[in-house]
Amino acid sequence: MSTTGRIIGVNGNMITVQFKGAVGQNEVGYARLGELRLMSEVVRVRGRYADMQVFEDTTGLAVGDSVDFSGELLTAELGPGLLAQVFDGLQNPLPELAEKSGFFLKRGMYLPALPRDRRWAFTPAVKAGDTVMAGDTIGTVPEGIFQHRVMVPFGLQGAWKVAEVAPSGEYTVDQKIAALADPQGARREVTLLQKWPVKIPIRAYAERLRPTEPLTTKIRIIDTFFPVARGGTYCIPGPFGAGKTVLQQLTSRYAEVDVVIVAACGERAGEVVETLREFPTINDPRTGRSLMERTVIICNTSSMPVAAREASVYTAVTLAEYYRQMGLNVLLLADSTSRWAQALREMSGRLEEIPGEEAFPAYLESVIASFYERGGVVTLRDGGSGSVTIGGTVSPAGGNFDEPVTQSTLKVVGAFHGLSRARSDARRYPAIDPLDSWSKYAGVVSTDDVAAARHVLSRGSEVGQMMKVVGEEGTHLDDFVLHLKAEYLDAVYLQQDAYHDVDCATPAERQRHVFAVIVRLLKAKMRFADKDAARQFFHRLTQATRDWNRLAMETEEFKQQQARLEGMLTEATGHA
Ligand code: ADP
Ligand code: MG
Image (tube, rainbow, N blue to C red):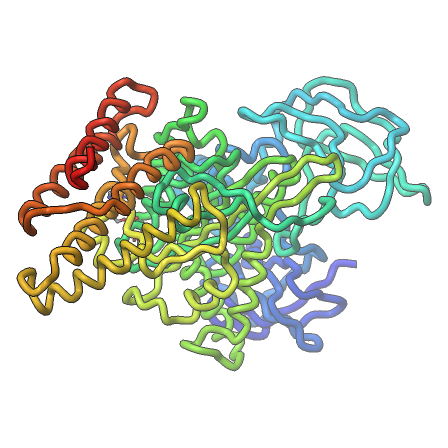
């Protein structure tokens, strides 16, 4: 049954293997290097030759070395124990690897993703004789703050009968907890653990829906101006150092989701290590405990082979889909997808495929599209629903968005949060460009108010440009006030202090309340004696509004500060 082959060519991380028997696209094989078995994946089959990408350093592999094919696709282990873990792209638990091998990754070393010795308290949800289908809940085990559903393996076709189910008790992930039988008499054992090929979407749900409900991130410029929908997709392109990673960390902390999956493909070698060090120290505003308890990190440093990087985004999205099947809302953050695209480019180059733009493969766009398509809201067979929201950063060289990865991503996502160098240099955080960014989703405030505010922003910015040419003296007082209004909106609403206890996260209700007041200020016909008076007024207004942003909404001080702002509005409009 098992197919074997011999290496006839080694080109970086790519090997060409001549085989006897059958080999399929994306099948996993192991190249033998002495005692070591190096995991590889078939990326192309031509006749009796398979091109394989090796997920490891290939130093020492030579023509004539043998390869064993597994007959299986690259799979992820799904079951309780995923949360709070840090994996590499092949789902090796990294802290354990560090323990076992003394340093991060030793070649040819693979560990089970889920601990085999840990016991989980299983409670059955079905009884013998019940009819079940793929994705149905067989029972639950508590995992962190969730009831982790143990589900009928996603690959099963049609209706099955529960032949037996284990009583409540403690079980390890590979102990049998149920047996299923189909009408033809086939039997299938169920454990807490199931495996799923990472490149195939999990579709054991009833229906896919259009994402319509806003996903509150508590970042004002996002929720109010460029919202993300639950189950939607968005991208954050930005030059190096503009704040992509910080923005994703803020979102992972404050977004109203159950589970966060972070696929970290480091730009700098130290960046992933930083993420790993920081995450466990971040506390979860929802539970007061470590954010890590509802997070999974899949990480790759730039020192790991590119093929593992490619695998990591698929592993990450598979874990996200798995938790969605449990009726949870999952946020998948990929940082940065440019590193992933570079892995594709490298592989395509080795395969000597006809290159597309900037040497990326011609199929780059479809690969990116099928990744984002795995996001979505679904209804489950039990009537519940779950979602996977995908946010990916893109780090184009030189911050130029006119390049294939940014452009391919923009074609498929529902929202675009473009980070601007000018804004980050001016420390206007989050540095999302309010003029270039867009979203196709509905947000948390009235669209008319947003349109009015955006009008002020764009007109105010035009006046600002003009003023650079003609100077302040050459600018009409009304235009000057418009410019001040735009700057005010930017300073008190678009910018948000990530390090202030209150300002760091603005719930939807507060955004609606605050934005209504600010829009009233923006729309007001203000009268000033001259430009200096206007400037001074907006300076005071900005200070007062910033102070307001720092007061907890439930407090008396918050109300008083709002009254002060309204008093200032009366003062400026000349109406009592
Ligand atoms: P990128 O991932 O785009 O390369 P980072 O997210 O690592 O950039 O941000 C670079 C630096 O910019 C951070 O280390 C931090 O000093 C600063 N920064 C980014 N976003 C913010 C923010 N929201 N508030 C304050 N500082 C920020
Ligand atoms: Mg970064």
